[in-house]
Image (cartoon, rainbow, N blue to C red; front, side, top):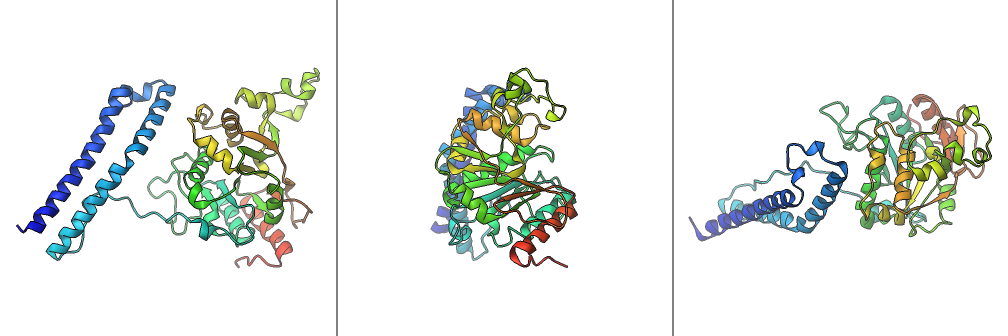
Length: 374
């Protein structure tokens, strides 16, 4: 064996030992400081302890991630050198995840007139009705917006149940169940926080597939707020218990259409939360403040809880200021579509085909043509 081959094998061995040591240290430290995480009864542990464990693992992984990256890189480099010596194509001995789409950069996201800079994010379902609504958005108001600025989050993909491959799918899979709306919403907010530096956005506008955005009006409305401050701007007031409502405090009876007092969190019971039908604008400052601390995920555990009160509880708990703004907030439920001055967000109510047709009709009126496929 030549000297070069011996050196290559030694490099592989050392890199492998470093990677094995790092993984072993993670397990040892976890077992020492948080023994119930590695036990068979972990699922029966106190949820608060498990949340503390998750925070611990995240901190440890962040501190030692360079070791993993360095070890993997050393293995790859050593294998490449050995392959070159042997005259064979390079092979990898490390399990590598399938190639992911490269996240968009600030240079690819923003147009010259994008001020303020808004990312559009929504939760969607693996369902033909909702996909048709999303398709309507992408063919109309979002058509000329770089695709990387429209972040659609769907459920987890199990085997082949997500239909078409990722190159044709309109949304990104998550780890969330289909009906867990709060989980999907938190997924896109986490993605925004993780890529904040490279995306360089001012706002993340959270929405649904049935909303038509008039971008110039929305941008003008958001320009009056400071995105560096931890604020969330939306139509507010939903979820107030009747006894905390101004009329309820006066002893007046609850109106028939007021709805039941849902159990959420005390702040929403007393002050009200988001009414997300017209969208929620999260400032960059709010997203940073939300995730740069340990989040109380109590409200995420109820799978059947709507996303709006879940998010409002988290925002209150994170000391994010909620500001009231309706963006115009027009509800549209009939054709032909009607243009209303100063409305930045149209909430289109109906089945998939109706919403799709309505968006194209309004877009044709506003822009001349939406190039609707035949």
